[in-house]
Length: 348
Image 1 (cartoon, helix red, strand yellow):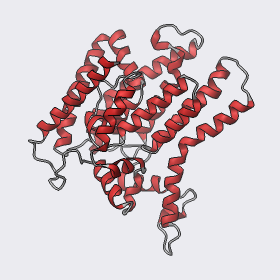
Image 2 (cartoon, one colour; image 1 turned 30 degrees about the horizontal axis):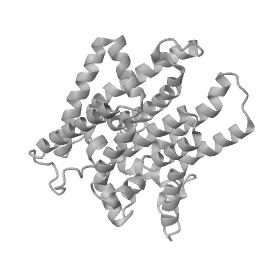
Image 3 (cartoon, one colour; image 1 turned 60 degrees about the horizontal axis):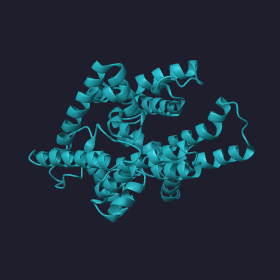
Image 4 (cartoon, helix red, strand yellow; image 1 turned 90 degrees about the vertical axis):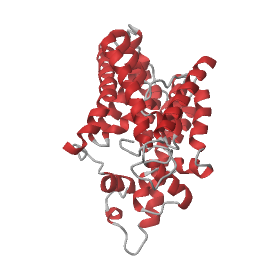
C-alpha cells in the first residue's frame, strides 16, 4: 500500500509540475488569475460565496460548493488524503483528466472516491454503508443515483441468478437503500421549486408536469438532451472522447456476451461474474454520455468506473497492440489536457 501511495503522490506531483509549466501560456480569459479556477470551478466558487444567485447555477449540486466554502484549495488537499485511503483498494493510474481528478477544486475526486467506496462495500455485502457512500457521491454529481444499481444487483439480482430465495427483509432493505442516492437530486430540485415557483410570475419550467430545474437549465444553458450535442461543431469533442468510450463499451459488451452464455462459469479473470454489474453500469453511463450529454465529460468520469482499468488491462493482455495505443494516448492526452486547462481552453 505504501508503494502504491507513493506512485499516486508522484503522479500528482507530475501533474502539478506540468500545470506550473502551463502558467507560462497566456490564458484565454485573463479575468481568472488563479490557475486552478477554470470552467465549473468558477461556478462552484461563486455559489460557495454567494449561494445560488443565477438560474444556470442550479445545474450544479451543492456538495462541491460546500467543500469550497471551507477553502478554495480544499479539494486538492482533501483528494490527496482520500487517495491515501483509496490506495489500499484501487489504483487511479493513467487518468484522462489529471487536473480535475488530482488538483482543481472539482467534484471528480470526491465522486470517484465515494463511488469506489460504495462499490467496495457492495462487494463486502455492507449495503447500508454502500448506500451512504453512494448518497454522498450523488451530492457531488447528479448521475450518482445510478450507483443504486449496485445495491439492487447485490440484494435482488444476484440471489435470483444464484437461485436463492429473496427474503422480505432483503427486498424492503433494497427498496430503502437504493432510493437513498436519489435524495440529493430530489432535495436540490425541491429547493429550487420552493425558491422560484411560489413567485407571482414563476418561470416556465414550474408549469411542467415534472418541474425539475436541473433538466431545464441543462437543456437551456448547456444544450444537453437527446442528440442535441450531435452537431458538426462538436466533432472534435466526440473524437477526443472516442478512446475511453470505445475501450469501456467494447470490454463491457465482450464481458457481458461471455457472462450471458456462461453465468456460472467464471472462466478467465476478465469474465468473472463480479464484473457484470460494473459492465452494465458502464454501458448505461456510456450511452448517456454519448446521446444525452456533453460527450467529452467521459474524460473526467472514466476514472470513477473500475471498468476503465479492467478494459485497459484487457487490452494490454489480450490485444497488446491496442493496449500500447491506449497507454500512449492516455499519457499524451493527460499531459495535453493539463496545458489546455492552464490556458483556459476546452475541453474541461
